[in-house]
Length: 106
Image (tube, rainbow, N blue to C red; front, side, top):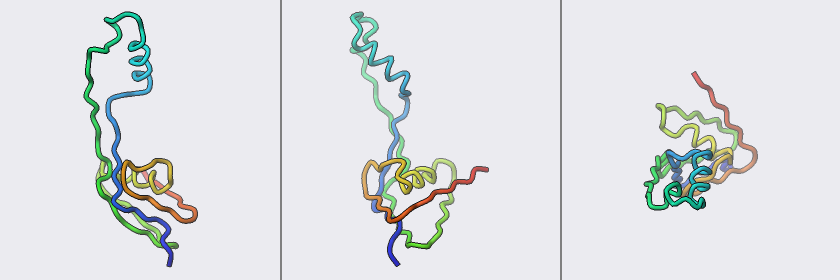
């Protein structure tokens, strides 16, 4: 059988701490004429969280796969990558045909 989903050394990270509203406000303040409001002298350290680190697996056509694990283990991120809702930071995600992701929350 042919491969329907292929993950090769997939890494995915998310940046923590900046929301869109806060980002827009910081950009607006940076271009303002008031040097006290600009915040140009402040350096902020970006914080990242790795949702997936070096994940590799294959799913053949016609197979059904369940992803089980504790909170924060990357289950939803894996489904997002397989469904092409998100892109990996590094690695290869290939899909063939239509891929559907179902999620059950308890």
